[in-house]
Amino acid sequence: MFRDYRISYFRRHVKIRETVPLSFLRQSVGYLLSYSARKIPHAAGITQLDVTRLVEYTSRGEDSPESSLDEKSVLKRAVRRNYSAFFLKALAHAIYHVPCLNGFLEFSLLRNGGTLYHAEDINFSFTVHTKFGVIKPIVRNPHQKDIETVANEMRDLTRKARRTDPDELYHAAARALAWSALRELDPRAVFGFLFWMREILFSRRRTPREFQDIPPEQKLRVEDVLGATCTLANIGMMVSGHQTVTVIIPPEVTMFGLGDMHLAPRVVDGKVVPRWVITLCATMDHRAYDAGEAFPLYNHLVRYIENPALIYEWKPGDPI
Image (cartoon, rainbow, N blue to C red; front, side):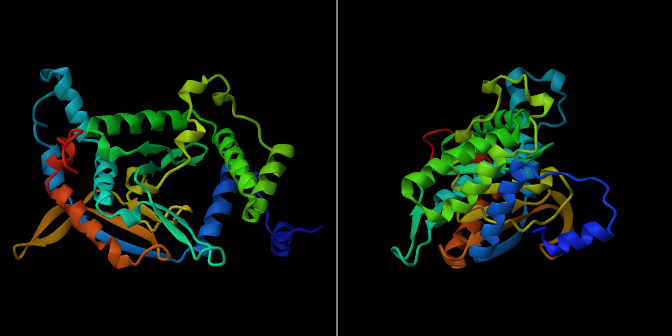
């Protein structure tokens, strides 16, 4: 009784292999992204980038066996192979020059018409696929850190994400947001608050055994996943997918998606030659800014890709 009539029909006429209760993470993702799809007018820009110079730069010295290199050289080689860290840092540098992409939107026509907050901090979250779902930890201000620091932080956060029970983490995050909603007396949070309370009172899931003996310092904290000003989803790290169209995570106004790096035919000087390429999708909240305001991001990103030393050799105090 009171079940969705379509689901009721399917339950009666389709053999069920297994019934899997949705985790709190899946419920949260479903609620948040459904809201995003309903409320945010998404505009997506998709471009294919020639990253041959980047590959050539990072391949220097590859002929030398690692056994013949000192520890510093081995570390430098490992960092250069970390394209995820390169693109996260390069995008942060590019966004620094295009501030409308970095921040959050308060859209309230009745109250004040709406406010776009350009954030000074560039808190870049990135997606980590785990056994129990995707978590997006945050690297804070990667444009102010050298590439080695960014790579180490991403590796550390990724390890912590895979040692963290997503339900436990997002319960804590929901609690922090619930207190914020109560302080602001925001009625828009009522539905989210109710399904959070229902999950606390009538949870159908137990903490997996593999998370029970992990000390807190080896897990992600709430501060590691709340407060992002933009997000990078790198599907190319998981599948051979050339393209992804991402859904913005409110109140952020920009989300990036990277495909895999692959060889493709390109025309160079009138000849068809193999080049290393990667597809970048930038999804924009069209309420916050027009697409034309985001176009300079492409020029800045191409500058870093064609001159990788601007990222790999960058040190705190250097121009961005």
